[in-house]
Image (cartoon, rainbow, N blue to C red; front, side, top):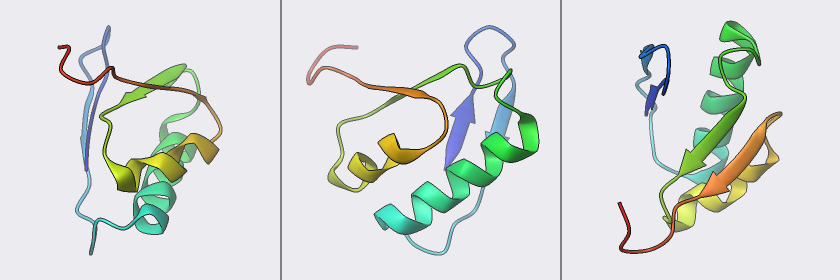
Length: 69
């Protein structure tokens, strides 16, 4: 999983054992806990099915519109 800070250009790369919703959610919450909510005010996700559960993390989340960059 790769997280990139929009303004700070901070790059966080995490190796996760699988790409299931529970695993992704736990890894993302760990990254938020480690870096703090100051670094992650909002998070925008691709529209993949396994990312739907990530809206449960402790920050404001958005999902990209399909076919728009």
